[in-house]
Image (tube, rainbow, N blue to C red; front, side):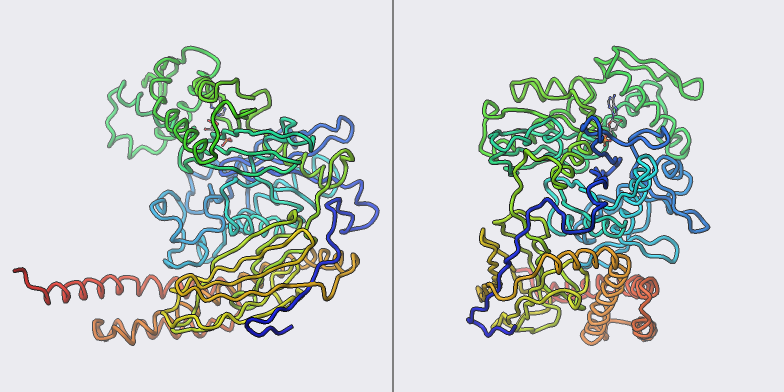
Length: 635
Ligand code: AMP
């Protein structure tokens, strides 16, 4: 359909589905297990509803424990190892061992900001808005692919332990995850061969695990305090008619139990008068102290005193009293976050009906006491804080499967709604299974200098390439003032009302230019067509994700070519002839590999060009600053 500016085109969804998804496959479906997955920064878990007890259980395959460390190691001969076995390589082969990949999901290099050096492996720095990539030797991985490795392992463990195929899952994400991070999590699930029924907020899952939110008539305000190994967040949720709304969230994505371990190590260093330099050089000693500190911390959750030695000589003793003194600033920081979150949610502690504890570090007695004191009530910690999110995700999966007849199912969108972005890719705005009414949006910009029009094409469907999806509408946002590429800010909002009518609006924020289209009842889809579209997205998941990655690599490459060529045109006079020649050579190499369709080759050429040219920008900046200064006189 074509829309002229100002015209109203319409299209409707006649077939709003109920979430009790019988759309996907045939009769076996009812028997199939749907799992709940907590894809964590440090640890991940998978849980399911036990068919007899109807209670959620975390899966412990082969007695290896329920917790799977979120660590992926790539061996020399191309094998992938995930979990505890991979963790051992963190010290012996850090460049090929990926941890904390969740911190990178859906992020651009710019987003990482000051935390770039946190990672022991190589993150590609193309200083762009593009999503980060990780380089291991000659291969490039996206955080989506690496997260998919963790999900594949969880899926395999579930299949092995339950002796049944596992094809569908609910995956949790932090409440503060943005659209791009949620989409990346969905994509990782798809790549692991899972149909992701829903992405659920971690605090919502934790509440469900405690039975809050199961009865739709319940009205409650809940605080979920989540202190893990490396991250902390507090979320204030309001539960109304079976829907959880996040009122506020606060936290520190670089604060957790690891900081407590470090506080203990520093104390031991002081007590034993260890010299920092010797310690810095002795990786083994560092590692032993780290393990010992964690052991001490865990022991002090039960007892008052801990004593041990490292290397037979270094005294590693600590009392609970001392430990509490050391970690007091960490705990105080988290309580300050709670205060902020309560302020943002406009709630007082008396208005909080329940406080839920999540994450291994909430086992520390001081943490429990401080949180209970702040909220003026005993926090809920009867469930295992490591498992509670996965258990809740399993409950949500069970609800979505329609197994809980007592639960009201809400109207949802049967298929994802999104728009076309560079290279014909589908950018999803409202994911399928979102309850309606709903509203979502994203910001876009131009890719060419002086671009004054932007075409907005609206699609529905689950495939990565828009050509495989259904086109609903298209319009041009005209009259964007001419600006350099990347300057205009275009907000695209999707508003889906309770009748399933979709309004798409695009606004350029600097100029206020605005255009909208209302997508109304034209062609309804049959349930069979929806079913087919869902099936296709799973069958083609691998190919789709590969195609997406090649297109993304190509787009990054094209932008890089455009920028470097423009740079040479404008600033060539500041470069030496050899530098210009080498840049031209590298530009040509990149142009040559572009048609190859090999994302690793393309990204390698981008990386080379980037590494070679990145010092230029700074040099040119210095020259312009000098020139500007020279032009000014001090009176
Ligand atoms: P999570 O990221 O939620 O898996 O939490 C892991 C963190 O919980 C790590 O820093 C662990 O050292 C910490 N942890 C686990 N068990 C205990 C315990 N019994 N007492 C104190 N901290 C613990």
